[in-house]
Amino acid sequence: MRLAFKTLDDIDVHGKTVIVRVDLNSPIDPQTGRIQDNERIQAHAETIRELSDKGAKVVVLAHQGRKGDPDFLPLEQHAELLSKHVGKPVKYVPDLVGEMAEQAIKNLRNGEILLLENVRILDEETKEASPEEHAKGVLVSRLSKLADLFVLDAFSAAHRAHASIVGFAAVLPVVAGRVMERELKALSEILEKRSSIILFMGGNKPDDCIKVVEALLNRGRPEIKMLLSAGILGQLFLAAEGRDLGEPSMAYIRKKGFEPLIGKVKDLAARLRDRLKKPIDVAYERNGGREEIRVEKLPALGPIMDIGSETASMYADIIRSAGKDDAIIVKGPAGAYEHENFRKGTAEIYKALASSKAFTLIGGGDSSTAISLVGLKVEDFSYVSLAGGALIHYLSGGKMPGVEMLMRG
Image (cartoon, rainbow, N blue to C red; front, side):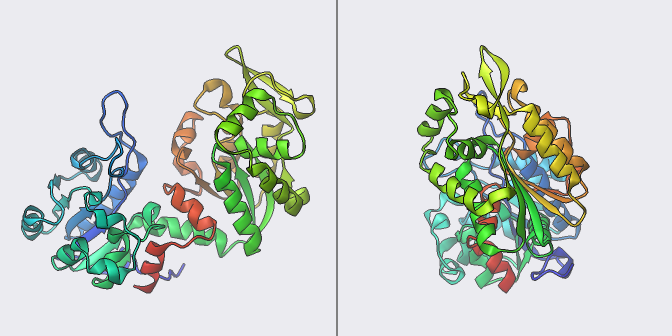
């Protein structure tokens, strides 16, 4: 497949100083205060290892948290985890644009890897601006003069026009790293090569789901063949048709500010008509256990935590019947999979996806954890995105400054 941007296959990096922007933003263990190992670090290690193996002098830029937040940390721990996954030492320098960082970059030998300090220590990093404007800032102006090439591998941050994402494009050649390349290939496979898609929309961020559905409906191609609703979105569709979910679930919806979305999903239901599938039964928590109830017998006596067995079976049959020319986009789990009693819906849906002939793209921040808990592997699906919010932004038709920068570069 011919790509509209350059990748690591298009350049010779031997002996060159390469700045690579990755996304190492990681969850923090509340018990120890240390960052947790995760799939993003493992995935970006592949790009970094390849650059090193090809003889590049590798300078890694990344962020962790935001200024003022508890997870805003230096990147020393990230260097340790990167070293483990790259299989080579990753030197950490507690400096970003000062003399220590400059000397460390100048002293790099072919194949050596250096991780600089959290890019968000600079206030200019998070300012939204054009590549040309950012090129005049401290970060880009100081580091670009020490480098020959910029590699953007952080698709998950590419929806932000931040200095370390777009600024280097104004002054250095730019290519995509392997994570970025895989994300864009998977999205192109669906949005450009498929004429119709099936959506499975669950999780606890219904506003994100609504944005994706609305954008795809407005786009017109690929056509939404079917929307399988679950999670909070499924509950909102039930509420929109007049179902009384029960006070525990409605209290949660009000608390999260989702009640105004009921009108939106009512409009979506009218646009989708028979392409919309809603839960026919749900599972709720009662006395610490799982109880199931048909939707016509609602309200539930406890908070709704999962789709019911009949709904899971119906959705799984639809997924398994999809052909090799179909694509399925999955956003979020079917329910509160982190609780074993309410993992059933997610397990049945994900197992059907793993056996499907269709191209399956799994998105959402909890995907990899959910996949593991239901006894599957990432490799069981066509593609599992690491992007989270950026994936939703892309599917919703939002601007992606990092991707635009790659296409022009």
